[in-house]
Amino acid sequence: MRKHTKLLGTACILAMGIAAPAMAGAPVGFAGTIGGGYTYSSSECSGCGHSDNWNVNGQAAFGFGASDVAGELDAGWINSSPSGASGSLNT
Image 1 (cartoon, helix red, strand yellow):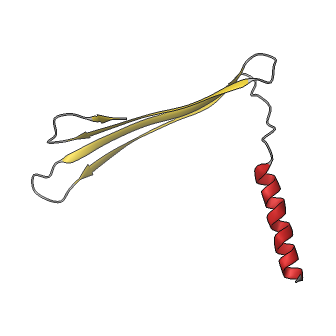
Image 2: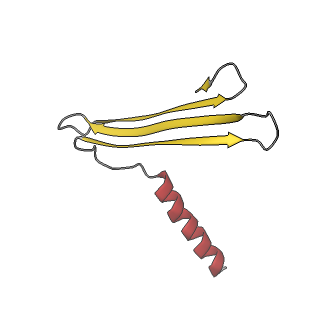
Image 3: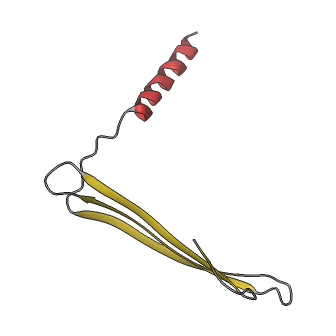
C-alpha cells in the first residue's frame, strides 16, 4: 500500500509540473540560433544516381520594448536534388 501511495504522489507532482504554465519573461533584445546541413546519398548499383540534400533552419525570440510581450519565429528550408530526375524538391 505504501509503495502505491508514493507512486501516486510522484505522478501527481509530475503532472502538476507539466500542467503549470511557463512563467519565463520576455527576452531583452534578440536571441536566436541557426543551423544547416548537407548530405550526399548514392546507391551501390550502376546507373542509380545520387542525391544532394541541403537544409537550413533557425529559431528567433525577441522582446517588444519594456513590456512582457515577445515574439518567436521558427523556420526551415529543405532542398533535395536527385540526379537523373528533372527537378528538385523544395519544402
